[in-house]
Image 1 (cartoon, helix red, strand yellow):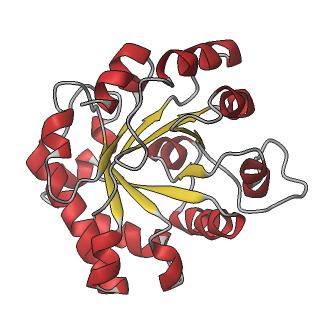
Image 2 (cartoon, helix red, strand yellow):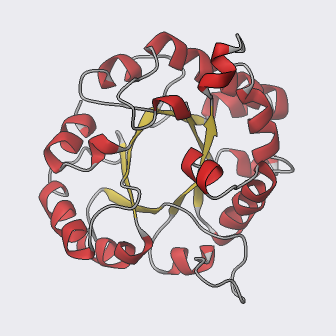
Length: 249
C-alpha cells in the first residue's frame, strides 16, 4: 500500500509569527502518520521555527526549494545539507513557478534532485502540463519527457525516495482544477513512465500527487483515483480550517 500524502505549499506567504501560529492551530488534529503523511512547505525563513513548534507531532515541515551545492559562493541559495540538519526532510523541486519565473530547466532540477537525495532529503518533484499543449491537442502525454529529464541517472534504489507532483500550470491559482479523470490520466502516465524506466514493482511503490486548484470540494474525488496518492494544495493550504478539512477529508 502506498501511504497517501496531503501537502500544502504556502509559496511566498506568511511571516514567521503567522507560520508558527498556523501550525499551533493544526498540529494536534492531524491523522496518524502511519495512515497518511501531512506535509507543509513554507518560506525558508520560517522553517526552523516551524520545525521547533511541531516537534513530536505528525506534521512534516518542508522546504519550497534548494540549490544543488552543499556550500559555496551562491548568494541567496539554500543548501540541502543545511535543510536536513535543521530537521527539514522534504523539499519541493521544479514547481512550475520556479520554472516560469526563475527559468529553471530540467537539467538544473535534475542536479537538485540528486543533491537532495545525497543530503537525505525526500524530493517532491513537480512536473507540468501547460494549457498551450492541451489546446494543441497534446493533452497530458508530454509529461513523460519531463519525468525522463528530471529523474535522469537516478539509481534504482533511490527512485522510491522521490515523490512526484503532477501539476498543470494552467490550473495553479486559477480556481480551474483539472477534471479528476484527466488528473488520473496524467498520474497514470507518470507511473507508466516510471515502470518503463525502473520496472513495475518500483512504479507501484512510487507516490504521485496532484496539484492545481485543489479544494475541499474536489479533494475526495481526486483521492479516490487509483494512481493519485495525494494532493499538493496551494491557496487552500493558507487557511488552517480549510487545510484541516483537506487533511481530514
